[in-house]
Length: 266
Ligand code: 2HA
Ligand code: ZN
Image 1 (cartoon, helix red, strand yellow):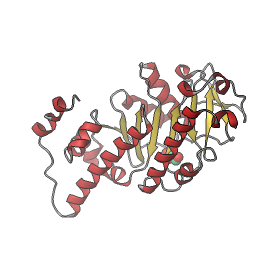
Image 2: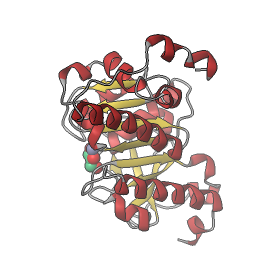
Image 3: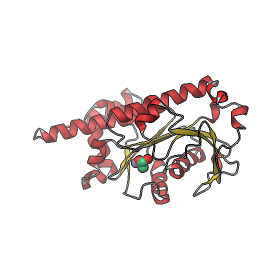
Image 4: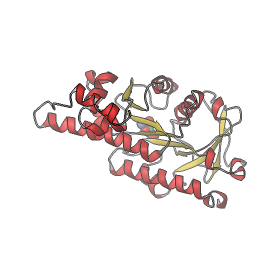
């Protein structure tokens, strides 16, 4: 549709989403249709885009998202592969508009691609973050092998312990993920239970580990969200590499970690 293609800001953002989708695949975090992305592009859409007619039947939401009335999102499609989102974002995702009362959404461009199975949880997260005054635009969910691996080890299902371990592998980890990483217990993918448990944790963290499933990051910029997960994944790799070499990594001390706070204004 010309009207979307002519909007430079939206096309730039969609290209950044496609760039990150490619990273998720090359990182090995996106087997088959693993992972999903939603980005709020309301601030980039002009009135003509906001008024586009639906190109597929209206779809109800599991729970109302009143803070998102009329908002426009790019969302990856259900069953779609990240490696193909990277090549063709409009054949593997769509632009949707939430109804004014926040109870449903319409697909408005470019193709009638049904959004990710996690659409309820994504929109509930966007809605929650708006409701507490945040301007978060991005929800990024992916399946990083190393971080998921850590969630199979009971002691790491404690947010404080997991965060402390990952932070202490390299200074960047605390600098890039200053709030640390929250834990969401295993739930059925795509379920409302997963959505509720996730929102609970978003009050405290911008990155969550979904037990034995994946990672979720929220933020204002899709590249930053990717970088945050990538940095924590790097820490997990250092931890596992040390363990596989037969030693427990020493890690930075509490004093060394705390010295980062004033140095980097955390
Ligand atoms: O999109 O990753 O959590 C497939 C998934 C579900
Ligand atoms: Zn998943």
